[in-house]
Amino acid sequence: MPDTKISAIICTHNRDTYLGAAIDSLLAQDFAADFEVVVVDNGSSDRTREVVEQRSPDPRLKYVFEPTIGLSVARNTGARFANADILAYLDDDAVASPHWLQILYSAYQDNSQLAIAGGKVTLLWPQGVQQPRWLSPGLAANLGAYDLGDSIIYIQQPGLTPRGLNYSIRRSFLAEIGGFDPQLGRVGKNLLSNEELQMTEFALQRGWQVVYLPEATVAHNVAPERLERSWFLNRGWWQGISECYREQLAGKAGIAQLQRGSERFLRGLYKSLQYFHDPAERFDKLVYAYGQIGYLNAAIQGLLFTSNKK
Image 1 (spheres, rainbow, N blue to C red):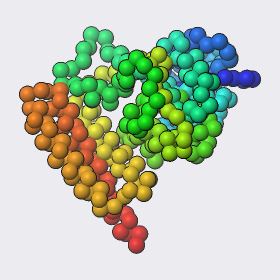
Image 2 (tube, rainbow, N blue to C red):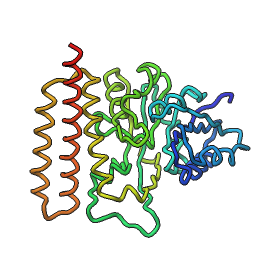
Image 3 (cartoon, one colour):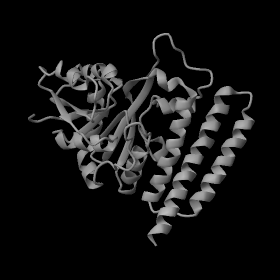
Image 4 (tube, rainbow, N blue to C red):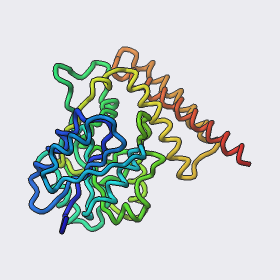
């Protein structure tokens, strides 16, 4: 597509229920120049292809099949097939606000040092469902909620990095760091994460900038199965594993991980007792403590693997 200013990319795996609304929100964007929508079908076995083909008369829409399962793999595939210098990633169960692409694109045009940009994320609850009493604001972030206020903020702390479901990146920066790391992105039903956090670390280390744009808003559907406590415990477990892997990739592996994980586990248990009468914060701290078991499990496996190689 000639002179494409920005490429919107949806990486999807068996989410045909939500996918149509995500695509439609992109095709309906109020954007002054040419853009494209690339849907990367990451090994889906449902109606994903049919959902895309129903909208295929629109020349801005492109379908790509990627058989190797993994979010980071799919993201890299989307970047490879996209034409623009600015890549905007939207989750397959999210809906972009009408000016989403324009706000993102303008930010990059105004700042040649901008590597990553993302915006506010609100939650769309299933019909007739309200936020559970046991769900803290911290755990709501696991559902995608992300709100740093109504002002533009340049990110200095990687932990505040934009969420992957509302995420954009400059192609030249992505090429500079070698793409998204397949060891950190979600693969099938495992919930590995932290690839966006790692990207922000790389950007800041190399003198690039990362920005939060409050008006680049996306709404994220909360799937009913994610409203079970077991989902959050599983999410916490994989978060711990992801943090361990990220440290290992950064050369911080070793026996010190056992000390760090043990201290954080005990801290989480202690705080859960402190918040005994607050069901939301109590469960929040228990999820944190449970995540440290995942972290310790990965750290021990890493130490054993290193030992066996010697």
